[in-house]
Structure formats: structure tokens, C-alpha cells
Image (cartoon, rainbow, N blue to C red; front, side, top):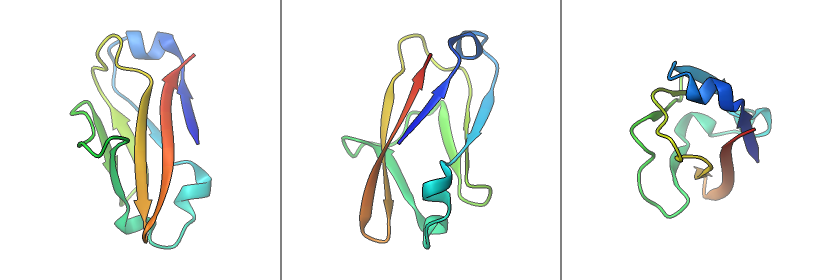
Length: 86
């Protein structure tokens, strides 16, 4: 699954947010999802996920940081989520 944000928004330096893709947000167990980088390391400090709102927030995205591929684990299953710019 992919989330694409405008490059102008990323370069502005402003914080922004985006929802978990609907296909994942509707899954049973989403409130206990584990989110990591695809390689199993923690998500970068500039990216946060709120289980309560099922949304991400990003601030001060470093130049060249995208695309980022995350692993979303829910109830023993895994999905790839890519955040990129257009």
C-alpha cells in the first residue's frame, strides 16, 4: 500500500498528517498494530503513529528521507506501507 504526499508539502518544513490507509484501518486488531521500518528497525523520529486516531503525523522530514517503507503487523500478519512524495 502507498501513501503519496506532495513534494511541496514536505519541503515546506511544516508538520502534516495522514490517515492509515482504509484497508488497514478497518482490520480487526488495528488498535494493537506494530509499526516498524521494513528492516525491523524503529520508525524514524520524524514520523509517529497514533493508534487512537489511526493516523500518522510527520514533522521536519529530512531531505532525501523518502520513500520510506514501513512494516505494519496486525494479529500475526504483515503489510508493507510506503510513504513517498510526488
